[in-house]
Length: 168
Image (cartoon, rainbow, N blue to C red; front, side, top):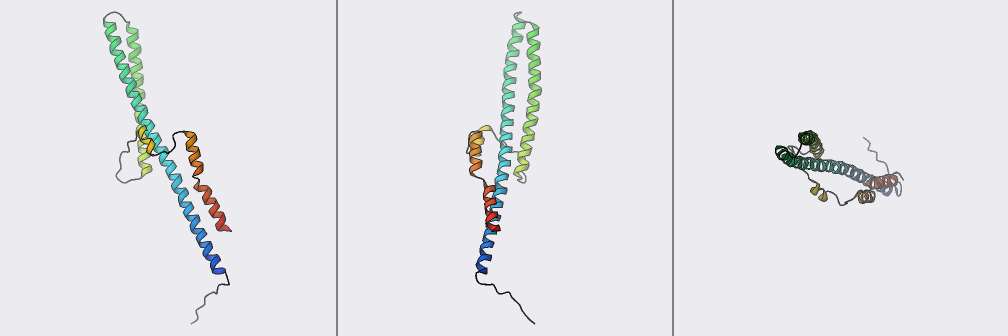
């Protein structure tokens, strides 16, 4: 029975060790890229959910205002001051806004289901987010600031640099 083992030439062990550490660094950068991309997807889903909720709230406010106007127009029509045309016009606008509110509610539900699926937390059925909650998810308040933040945190560039170093 013979056992054979290659003998490393002078300096070969250090080079192999350095290559292994570079591979570890590259794998770490790949993980950071994956997490960065995942965070971007989650931030997008959170924004969609928050703004969908705001659109529903705005529709509710507009419907309440139209109902107040309709009450006023009806009372004026009863007193003979306003025509039935004004009442019909407000009723039509109210019906249109009610239908639009239903569409906004569907959009909100879709945004919420997208967010819940992206979070992938077992048993989570709802993820309520409002526009005010966005501040804790974003350091940047404007699109321009978000671009600057994204470019300053480019793990994909770090990955490319580390892969280049590992290949050397």
